[in-house]
Image 1: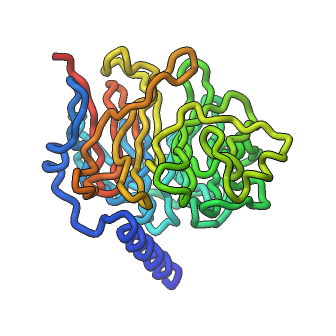
Image 2 (image 1 turned 90 degrees about the vertical axis):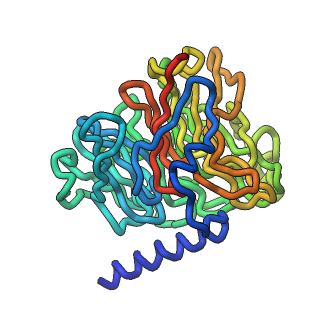
Amino acid sequence: MVNRLIRVARHSLLLFITAFFWGCTSTPPSTDNILEKLELPKGFSVQVFAENVPNARQLAMGTNGTIYAGSREAGNVYAIVDKDKNYKADRVYTIAEDLNMPSGIAYRNGALYVAAVSTIYRFDDIEENLQNPSAPDIVTDNYPTDGHHGWKFIDFGPDGKLYVPVGAPCNICNPDDDIYASITRINPNGTDREIIAEGVRNSVGFDWHPKTDDLWFTDNGRDWLGDNRPPCELNHLSEKGQHFGYPYKHGHNIWDPEFGEKGKSMDREFRDPAQALDPHVAPLGMTFYTGDMFPEAYHNQILIAEHGSWNRTEKIGYRITRVTLKDGETTSYEPFITGWLQDNESVWGRPVDLLQLPDGSVLISDDHSGVIYRISYQNG
């Protein structure tokens, strides 16, 4: 009972801090008002797939079409059922609660994997037990316990391994333990952990290129170098063990005022971002679009959920952006969906993750309003 009260108090404190810094203390507007404000390219439309999913974060889809959502401050994991298959949720189940920032989830072979900071749980046979899930098994409890950048995005790669990032336990520092500021992968049973990318400050979204299977990931840039520095990043891991600069170098040749000189003296190559994103936009979930619904110009291109700035003089982000590629190189970076940030800088939504459905439409989670949107396209 005492532990439960401590967890509830911690979640309440996190919600208060989040509201204070992000200007989210007012009640969010109705979903109808939000839908009216969202701006999409011609032919695209947006509707509400699910409401009442508090603090919805990473999304995953089960074998039977059930949509799962993690959360951060809420401490819950949800299962969203569209029984009628009309792209409108009929029911939202809370299948786990009072976990430690269970932001990251992944589905594999009938089981739901949930990352709660230091521990990854596995809920077996979850599709058949939404109303009464069995107690989860612990896959591993060997990740750091730090709350700072401790929440995670997880997913299974083409190699069948579970990919787990570990953020830096600070804004800017040089931790002694190599596990920090990295991306790791483990076997589905939690064994054989290895670091595959270093110098990654805080990645909360990644996907694999549909043709090469290379890992691409977003990374949140450091704070307190000013409104316009450094950029956030979209990165491309082309081989295991590459270093992406943190804490020594940011973006393209922005050497850190505290750690840059040490970085310059190291016999180590730091990989530049594939695409420098706007500063402080907090890029989270990303996906390669591989469906048939959207126009051809979107095929095998990247969509990114930019959660939005919290410490910039003028807010930025709060949108979905598109990065286009040609021959493995980025060619453009531009807004795709806007409107969650109003002209008076009031925040009406904070996109977190994207999930492509079998019909080619795309779901977007919003942890500010507790809504999951569905984006579709119809020519003409």
